[in-house]
Image (cartoon, rainbow, N blue to C red; front, side):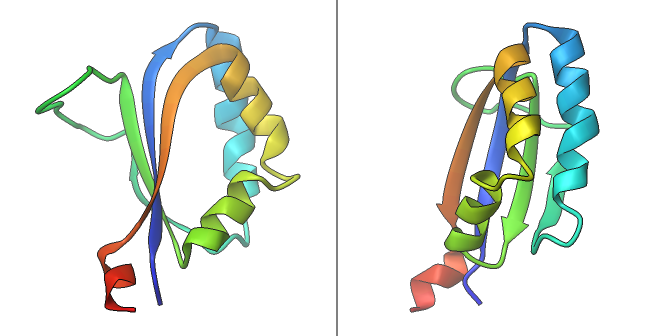
Length: 101
């Protein structure tokens, strides 16, 4: 298993209604998807770098699983609301177990 993670850093919400619709739709896309929520907008502290409004981390069994979910037809409607209403940084990164290859 070579875990990969999506780190979602919410920088700001521009249109609250769009973000609320994203938050309603996005969970529907993970039903049956091979992922695990590690954090979901919990407490955090920026130790270095730009400030953040929220941080979530999702684990996937592989880098390709993460790409497939992000680019899926199921996630697209939620993504469109997120892009209209918020500024995020999403980072896809291999886990340390990928180094064992």
